[in-house]
Length: 352
Ligand SMILES: Nc1ncnc2c1ncn2[C@@H]1O[C@H](COP(=O)(O)OP(=O)(O)O)[C@@H](O)[C@H]1O
Ligand SMILES: [Mg+2]
Image (spheres, helix red, strand yellow):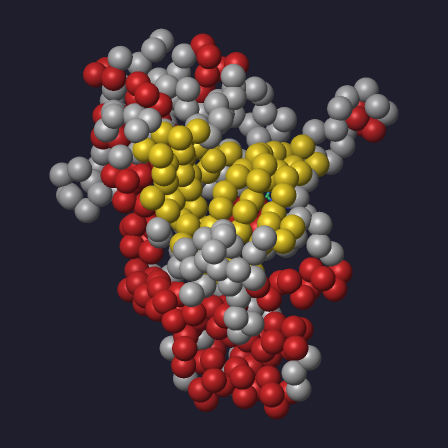
């Protein structure tokens, strides 16, 4: 696998979950409906790069992460990894490929089998990939434990004997056990208290430096993104609305949804802490969405065009390394996020 090109290239990726059919659909009078959880996402990740993926809950972040790791089969689109098309891998080829992309799940309790011991949990991918013996597996797991900050004498313990942070270290050890080139970190620290979050994030950063692993970091935590990510992707209702280098994007968000999302993040300054932008309007349904911008019903800058024409992800005004999907990017790009804070942003000349 060459290090020159992108490690992961996702193009037009879709995941639609069919909805249980009603009687009308069964007898053929109505079209089957589907939840468009991921709806046309294109994204690349370079070797060793960290891309942060942010967006409200229900925007499709986990589904996108699972697609990238091929834990879901896509409805449409392509996934290339190291230059090879892996969209339709199955069976043995898929199992073999899985060593390249590992997932650390949000919930370290639900994702660790309580009946298995540490060496079995961490060693499972090793055994699946290499068919290593029990003795070989135990030895490899023992060698891995210090790299995630766990004591080597915990090989025979069970997950419930660990704290939340300890369990997440087990998950990280399991993921790195097969030397992946990409790790999908799905809210890896959101279940942990703040001090432990920092320890786990630091460990992940160090592991990345040591092993040159690329990360897709899914998180609500903008501070974590700022600290860890090279680029940020913003997902809204299954579609990317903005993508760019972390500093530029967080300091100067162009898309109205990104501005709203960042304005809603509590800031450490006590004076401003109470200010929250209330994103107005209804969240459009992910079930068979209508044409037009999905943020249109809630956007303070909406114009008629937004309600009929899908905005495509295109280079942001004056920034070749940034992409934004907004018809009005040129006009609204410079509006600061704070201007979207409630009450009504009258200074913004929002269109009625
Ligand atoms: N296995 C599934 N079957 C049906 N719908 C699903 C499934 N997984 C996720 N969804 C739906 O897809 C949408 C996106 O979910 P998810 O990817 O979990 O979002 P996020 O991680 O951003 O909170 C939600 O509406 C969710 O209910
Ligand atoms: Mg999720």
